[in-house]
Image 1: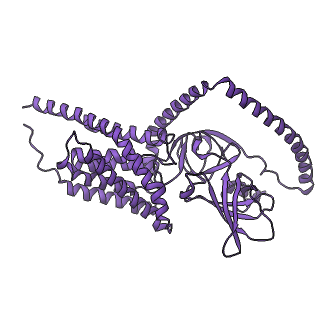
Image 2 (image 1 turned 30 degrees about the vertical axis):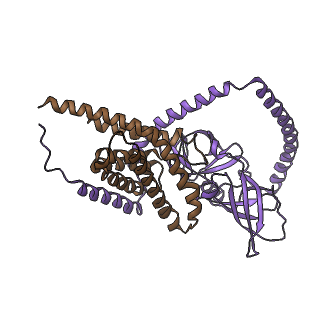
Amino acid sequence: MKIKNQTSLSSKYWLIILVLICLLLLGIERFTDSGGPLRLVGNYTIIPMQRGISYVGRWLSDISDNFETLEDVRKEKDALQAKVDELTIDNTRLRQEQYELDRLRELFKLDSHYSDYEKIGAHVIASNGSNWFSDFTIDKGSNDGIKVNCNVLAGSGLVGIVTEVGPDYARVRSIIDDASNVSAMVLPTADTCMVRGDLKLIADGRLRFEKLANNENDIQVGEQIVTSHVSDRFVQGIFIGYISEIEVDSNNLTRSGYITPAVDFSKLQEVLVITSTKDEMTKGTEEE
Amino acid sequence: MKRKTAVLVIIIICFLFQSSIFSHMEFAAVGPNLLLIVAASFGFMRGKKEGMMVGFTAGIFFDVFWGGVLGFNMLLFTLIGYFNGSFQRLFYDEDIKLPLVLIGVSELIYGLITCFCLYVLRGDFAFMAHLADIILPELVYTILATLVLYQIILHVNKKLEEEEQRSASKFV
């Protein structure tokens, strides 16, 4: 018969040991960058698995898309055709204006590096498993030139910001996360405000904006909100969403309300990452 | 050794499912907490020590990949594994009521502590809203997930115990 190991510690001591380890880690966290080596190990073990699973998931959703009926596809095609026509007209007009803008910029010797940023595409491979945060993992990392504080877009709108980078993965905190604050401005009047994520609003996919000055500028529901020129992390002029509600605060000095974001955060699959951060861009201009 | 590998595989699979598949199956932006089910069920099936170890390991995964600070969820999951372990004497295979109640209570406590430490301490006092929007839906969803996941874990555990008994009787 197997003799029970008498020297093994009782579970109470184990509990104390493990709790002490956790507390020690929590304490260390205050002074160092969190979980560095463990995250590096994760990069080569867990991230490939997540990539595989999300690849299978994408493949399955592609297959289910194949079963859409011809009628649906036709309807969608008509809608898209109408959109293409509309955008073509817009585009010609904008091109003319762009030409004019370039000419005027040249006259004023203004730098135009803000107009197009270099981007790379990435797949979303995992989201946060706890319901208290909304961040997600993408399958590109520092090997592809992504750095902490890179801005992340999907389609035409802002999604979030890179908070953590490994060799082959990066974690992105989305702007609907409760800890997220984005300095933004209302497009026509350039009044600045703060766009705050809110845990209570995640389920409806809305955002809250605050601290918009209550001045003579009339701001209506439906105006566009973009990232502002004063933000030190978000590059200027990225579309966030449309104002869906606005009211004057009780202090009569500021206005606040809600934004419908341009991005559907519940169905993120592919995102674009701007590979240069705002910090680098502003430093670049200072040196010139 | 075999048991350790099996448990680690269960944890990794639950971790991957929680972050990739269940995020597409969310209701009202809330998903189930599979790792908590694993930690709690190994607690009451196998006792304090093993529950604690499983909780600790699950907590490492949780903190390294999803959490903000390393150690917070490790601590919570370790304690959850330990306290579920003290109910081992009341546990019978056929009875699903005890696991449901224990996992439900663990999940509720987990939600309350997380809410308090990560939100209330930061000055966010919308406790009732968080309770209604996150804690209770997560509780319901986790209990639903328990009905399926617990059966799988129970089955795996039974197989492992049978095998251990067989190899132990070989040396008699």
